[in-house]
Length: 105
Image (cartoon, rainbow, N blue to C red):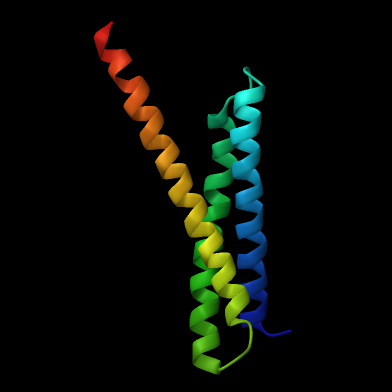
């Protein structure tokens, strides 16, 4: 197994892990009051960034050497990006709803 396919596989696994972690953070954040979503987001953010980085590195390596695995690298890259976008949207919604409450008191 060459380095490009290992990077592509790592990107895919990290992308899947970040999406599963994001879903767990959302579901458990609403179901378990003491746990909260913030503690679970700390796990998801590094996974999503790593998926994006490994996806970009794998795509570069695959393009240079003409190796297979571009679809796997793209999937991991897109999963990482989608996860980061969803987390950013959740952050903006929460900040928009709760930040004014801090200044009104």
